[in-house]
Image 1: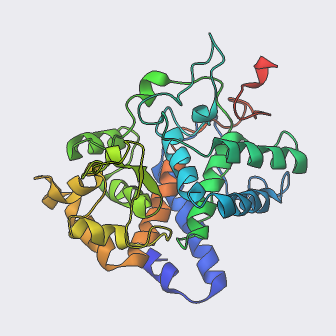
Image 2: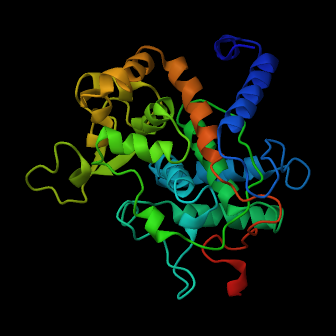
Length: 320
């Protein structure tokens, strides 16, 4: 069944089947789970059937007082998966000497946010089904729900990750950077088995949320502090849509690492055609974004008997 027919079909049953097939196809493209068990969209159907609804409810409540939360939560999932796989390591606080947090590396310090909301989700899930849902899976579910609530695509989240018991600060220092040139971004994505289409699609998450002005192409204007916030998409800043790519075509991307997908000399043969495609077809962007999120979520997850299910996302269980 062609992916294009999936997303154009008005039949809800067919659409649901198509999304599941897309999820399974996307999973096949990622790194194989290390614990010998495949991730599954039905992983919690028997053990915690309310998991999705619990996560959704907490995020809906949180965004009433903090409209930035959806964009912040998807960024947490991204920054978790790019550091030794999707294992919830980003959520760990310092617990020296064994655990040195990833939260203070340059890409996360005073930038990664939403941790209290993750705590609230974990508390609600522990009440609904104690010891069942991992913190790594919370991030995966929160990312999908955040995109959907902002008007973006839905996908069947593959679940069954377990939580890591270590951090990797050295790897976290090499997260994709707002000022990375295109070749460096491409290398960082290739290192986790993501290609140019994944790069352009996942950067599209910058279609909503805010960024500190010190990281923008224009930098801060006179009188602004370095931490002053600017909308990443100044056209539809709260909506998950394809306007981000039109901003790139007009040279108005906020982040240097976004604009290089068009401006870099090598972009014409690599990323630029994909930018043009997504700018002209929102459904094409949505379809590829969903597939790339599934693929990213399958980067080296801990499964089976590896890792643990943390009772507190900020601490490994052995600390208690």
